[in-house]
Image 1: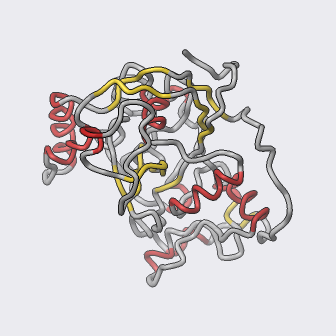
Image 2 (image 1 turned 30 degrees about the vertical axis):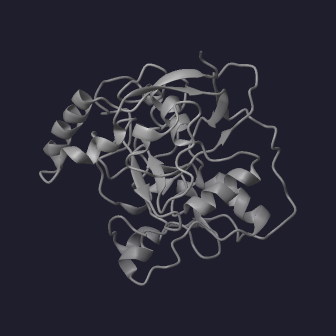
Amino acid sequence: MVTMTVSAMTLAAAVASSAATATTSQPDTDDVVDMAFIRGGKFVRGSNFEENKAAFKMCRKYDRACKLWWFSDEYPVKLVMLKTYLIDIHEVTNEKYLEFVKATGHPPAMDNSCTTDACRQGNLWAEDSSFPLRIRKQPVTQVSWHDAGAYCKWRGKRLPTEAEWEKAARGPSGNIYPWGNAFPKNKATFGRKWHGLDTMTAVGSYPNGVSVYGVHDMAGNVWEWVSDWYSRTYYNRGTANNPGGPAAGKFKSLRGGSWVNFADTLRSAFRRWSRPDVRFNDTGFRCAKSVPLAPEKNSRP
């Protein structure tokens, strides 16, 4: 699905990469060089009521319809224990997703349910699995939760849990944003209108916006699928030890905010939900792995 409309001229760029053909190619599932090591332990998850009120005040600057209860699913703040894990340093890019499509014959990153030109203009890929060369380093979008899970499985990984995502973003002490508590200007891609190929930025474009663990783009650019089913009240009743979300549900959780959102939504505690079968031009993902490797150069305590 498309978040905002764009001129039909945006896809008139030269298209790079050949049509995908299923092969027997398999990735090295032991390769974790592109992942950050997150040591097990406790971290501050969620927001307290004062933080909810501050988020509401910020939200009202951009949306007069904003309501305080919109942030109630972040409550209460709690110390949560997680096991050691790995998480991708960058969001999955178009060129990385193309490797998966070529190797498996998986459908291209497109919303094939579109019935209008406005919707179709949100598809940066073509039906032959090609896309403009200039977006190869941008995060892949127009992928459902199922698409994201299939890619991660192919790579020998999985989607992160909501708690794992939040710890990797805000660190153990509960920063407002991945880089700390300062406003996101020059630290993330946000507050934009749809401009086709120029809407998103290449992953890793904001070295001053990384988290304490060295993870990039966990605020803005694209929303990121996580593994959990969404529940507004889960933080009140869920376990504090390696939480994995409700056992079932209608919606899956998304984290991080995107190019179209404002600063209040980019906060690392902010939660969003969506049906797992939908595809949007502001939604991508990254993968995680449950392997307690010894820390290397990308590790932080």
